[in-house]
Amino acid sequence: MAKTLFDKIWDSHVISDLGNGFVLLHIDRLLLHDLSGARALQEAVEKGYAPAQPRLVYGTPDHAISTAPGRTEKTFPPGEPLIRNMRAATAKYGIRLFDLGQDGNGIVHIIGPELALTLPGTTLICGDSHTCTHGGMGALAFGVGSSELVHALATQTMVQRKPKRFRVHFEGTIPEGVTPKDMILHLIGDVGTAAGTGHAVEYAGSAIRSLPVEGRLTICNLSIEMGARTGMVAPDHITFDYLAGRDFAPKEAMWDKAVAHWRTLPSDPDAEFDREHTIDMSKVAPQITWGTSPEHVIAVDKPIPDPTTGPEDKRAAWTAALHYQGLEPGKPIEGTKVDWVFIGSCTNSRISDLRAAAAVAKGRHKADHVTAWIVPGSERVKREAEAEGLDKVFREAGFEWREPGCSMCIASNGERVPPGQRSVSTSNRNFVGRQGPGARTHLASPAMAAAAAIKGAIADVRKL
Image (cartoon, rainbow, N blue to C red; front, side):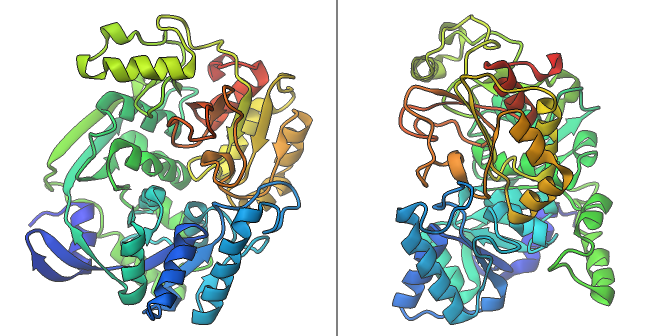
């Protein structure tokens, strides 16, 4: 029987069928961060549950830490107890922790692929909704709640209901100025934030196949913003080349066996999906969000939507979003003054993202009224960028060069956009208050964010 990529991984990890659509699933990797991970470890310890397979669990502090230059765990005091508890629990059970300043430290969804903790054909969970990022490697990865995380730590298993399958085709040549972030934002604007609910999404098509691994990770990162817990891209020679030689990748004879297995994972030609959707790449332009949901997105050269002409069931939400954002329908969004620019997060803080932003910033200077931050996704990204001189490019352009961490994406570490101020951000959510109470967030690609910093307003990067 023909199978999809998702089916092949799911079926190979089912321990037992529990009935009524539920199964007991084996989990290959557990990733922990300092918020949910630290709490789950502490709860497991308090209940007497030792981790079943400590060698399959990895941790890193990223959410509740400062990204200020020279930071320590004490720089953001509320985060210090979480980090200390995480250190104690991981040390007690022999769990590998990539601590602050150490090689391998960084945002959990950056270091997983970077270190090859994430491998094709594996199941991977983390107490974070953007765990779907790892699907860009051909893994079955999804976020879980705190009780599920404790259960998985204690048993290396999870009870799950099998979702339906949804395939999205991105077909055609990627236009100038368009990035993976623009592709996925365009899709969410096209189908809405509920389109993936109850589905595992596979991204396919000629445009996806042309993307490097880091672009595929960005695409999968926003799967949750479409309602899907997991998003996936079939592994291929681009994936294998990316993984070869990385820290936790299989070595020597095991590498050959692994690649041979990975080649069997792509969906069979006659595999059936419950839903399919196609995006024509010739119709995709650089994107910018205008409201308070990722589906509130338009091409940067289009006018701000008018709620009275929108879908009837969304008019109230559109009106409220425009009021919160301080925008008027019908006016161009390009040229809207911005106060902050944030380039970072598990969506867009990899080396390719920083290169794209630096290409725009080089030889230019940010607008005087804009505060612009560059937050690398990991210690390795930071060091690689510095070796290439990207930090110098950003500093000369007036940007702040900071330490790795989640930073202003979630504002859980004191790093916030002030109330009423407008931010162009490379992160994944523009919800009310996401970057701080009263903050107004516009999602965009790294190149678009850098262009906004230079112009001091939302700008079309193609014009730079």
